[in-house]
Image 1: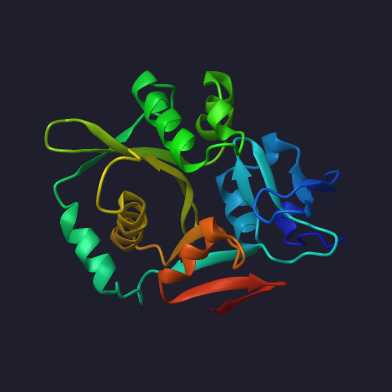
Image 2: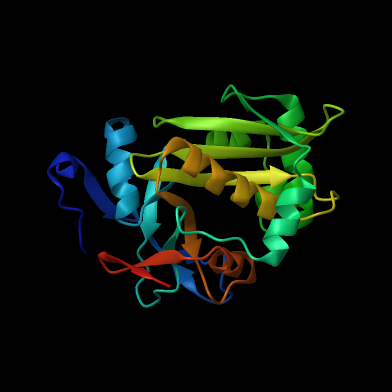
Amino acid sequence: MSYPNEPTLKTLQFYSTASYPCSYIDGREARSQVAAPTHLIDASTYSQLVLQGFRRSGYFTYRPHCDTCRACLPIRVAVNDFQPNRTQRKIWRRHQGLRASNAPLEFQPEHFELYRRYVSTRHAGAGMDDDDQSQYTQFLLTSRVDTTLVEFRDQDGTLCMVSIIDILDTGLSAVYTFFDPQAPGSLGTYGVLWQIDRCRAMGLPWLYLGYWIEESRKMAYKIHYQPCEILRGSHWTPL
């Protein structure tokens, strides 16, 4: 097992979970490497962990550590060199009427109702559509790092999309975005484009999009934001 070796990370411990069914590729077993204790993972430490392929779900900081599979590859967008394609430019223009504003990282019934509608449509049968208020809160609203919640509303004030975003030393990390599944115009794509634009406004060079899995349709879209890099072993390389 390999461990991060930066001096500020030496106080952490890393352990492997037991195997569990993979959520992305049918028939495969997955395993994660977990960083602990969670109370030592502050914003600076988490920024270093993300550079080494880690990601978080609530307080749980992990990276894929499967026995035989290396399909999950951390991916990040080089925002200063990013050039939207024709479809992305059209989507960006279409949603310019949306108003984005920061909101407290706390439970709001309006957010939860939108989340339930989103996962029941986009992730039916994956377990997320059974999330109750407690599971939703633990997944998205618990954080010891620098996290912001952004609401997107139309001109009538209707909530259309919510993005949870971590602010890192080297960029933004897209934690999770959910939106009205009936809304036209590819809101998910707009959410990524908005975060790229936000990185530029903050002077941050990278948008981290989690893991790219070529064999997973749900994850394959991430390579559409070019140029991007993936982490192979200990090196970020152009994809």
